[in-house]
Image 1: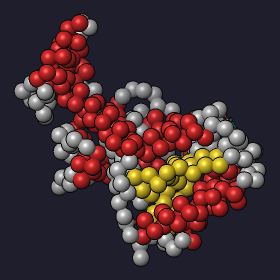
Image 2: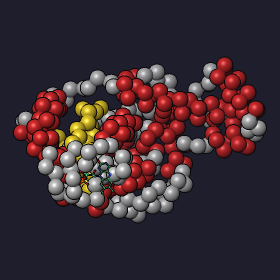
Image 3: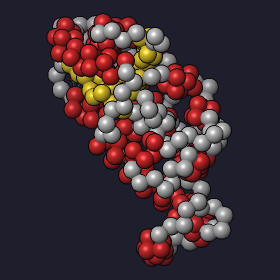
Image 4: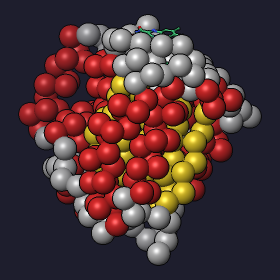
Amino acid sequence: MLKTRILTILGSPHDLNSNTRAMVEDFVEEIALAGLPLEHQVISLGKMEVKPCLGCWNCTQQKLCPLRADNLEAIKVAMVECDMLIVASPVYTNQITAQMKAFFDRLFTWCHIFPLLGKYSLSACTTGNDGMKPVGRFLQKMLATYGTSSFGHIQSMGGFTPGYFPFREKARKKNRKLARKIAGTIKHWKTLPVSSLQRKMFRVMREKMSGCNTFRYLADSDSKSDVVPNSLKLKMMKNILAKNDIVEEDIERISRMMEFEYNWWKERNWLKTRSFRQLANTPVPPGFNIKERLLEC
Ligand SMILES: Cc1cc2nc3c(=O)[nH]c(=O)nc-3n(C[C@H](O)[C@H](O)[C@H](O)COP(=O)(O)O)c2cc1C
């Protein structure tokens, strides 16, 4: 039986001494004990160089990232190749760590294209005593944004100082039931139901892409847009543009925003999809190499 490849992206700077890592490793061990053959790789952002995004938008324009010499590329490869992704961060001042935020920001284009569709996922966090809610919510949202199907979130208080995590055993016991459920699901490659967060992120992204499409149509109705926009929407948009003194030159400029993402949606035949399920069930067109494309941006 093939081993399930589980990848954890760890936002803690503590690497081997991290409380969050300890909780996740216990959890993955429980999945293995429940009978799922697996291999677990942990990428510790504290040990990697992932510089903060410069906000140049190059990636959205199919141009190279000026920071590409750092370690992000290797992390992206691991993400594309895994079967299940775990994003794990301690609470730092009520949020994820700066290392983890830099990592998510650098995947700007990935936020709009459901790059990891079809993969399982989970989020995890530890804390001293508070801040788990905002971290859990944020990590879950990111997992849905990437298109993954999440088993949920695991968390624990009582991570007091690095390597001092007296609630560790309690967390392991509490999470055992979920670990067993995950093992059973993955063993049979069962599909999880579409979640409300996936539905929500679909609506948000479709709105963005339909906006891109409308601007392309306004900039050059003959060649640039793929789908003819709804006439009422077009009329409303023209009114808004006129009221805000947005001239032809601006429209042309806006129409070129998110070129990479727009082309992804267009080439994967997603522009006309009406639901997350429909998008997920649209076959990948022949010649569209997902891995190659994801490493391009
Ligand atoms: C800079 C910093 C900020 C922190 N902020 C919070 C916080 O807002 N609330 C809290 O309860 N614990 C906070 N903690 C404690 C950590 O969340 C806790 O020790 C966690 O288990 C560390 O996990 P790690 O070993 O995986 O890095 C903070 C710790 C540090 C170093």
